[in-house]
Image (cartoon, rainbow, N blue to C red; front, side, top):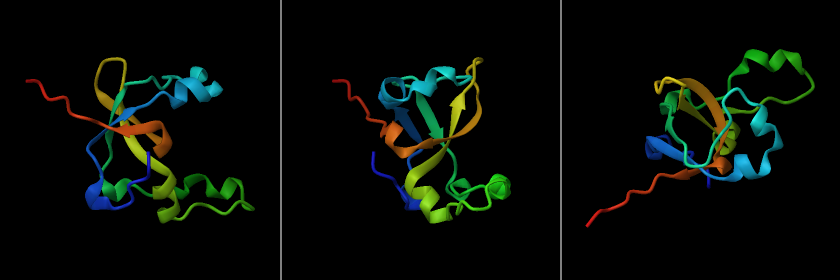
Length: 105
């Protein structure tokens, strides 16, 4: 999926596609692995920026600017094992698709 960098056009929900399960060997080692079809909430536009907390660890690596961060990543909220929206994480835009509505006739 192409990144949505305009804050007014951010969707409320996204759906995870098959890329994490198919291409990311490390996905199975995560505390809660990504699964195809999982619906996630997009965090508000003001939180969609780089977190400089750990930038001091690698001083030779140039940190992301907020614009670079928004072009590659999106901050989302996932459901925990109890079904509550509590897991705040960062995902790549390539692993998500827009949620499509199904119209019943």
